[in-house]
Length: 220
Image (cartoon, rainbow, N blue to C red):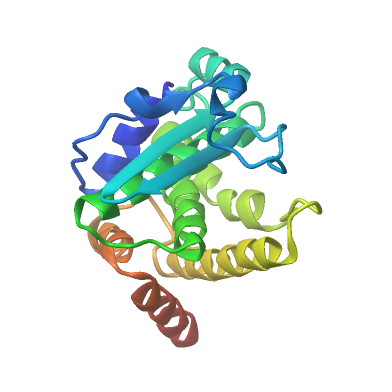
């Protein structure tokens, strides 16, 4: 499964038609990112979206580790999504999610916060993996998804305090939302009311996203 396939998977899930192809912005050699990065940037990350703003122009590059891309191509999540490729899938879908969300909002001249970028990526992991697992192995496998995604979160201890807090907040909000989705729509691929809700959530700005999460969690 190539990055473009992941982009199309998310595009179909959310009913969006992006006019940009992630392959045109994909970088797999980390050395090519040096002009984009600050001196204190980590060199061991396997996924990173880099953004450079200049006037009315927005420069974007998506870095995915070359070995990661090769492994997903060899072990296609559309054919098997298991412990052998689940971590790689989540890493890649997070990067593509960031790219799609920035591109979709930029086309509408909407600003995006880092919190909503991370929160949407966590929801995208759940929704897309649930879709694949339900198609591959039925609801039994899909029901095991939430613990795999949210039971044991581990955040990079090297993160700056503000960044760590942002990741924790985004993860917490997304976890509560996905738990609510799973409780209200417990079986099958995302369809019907669940799919409509996911698409509305994707299109909502950050305040509306957070408000919706609080509303559905309190109601459940």
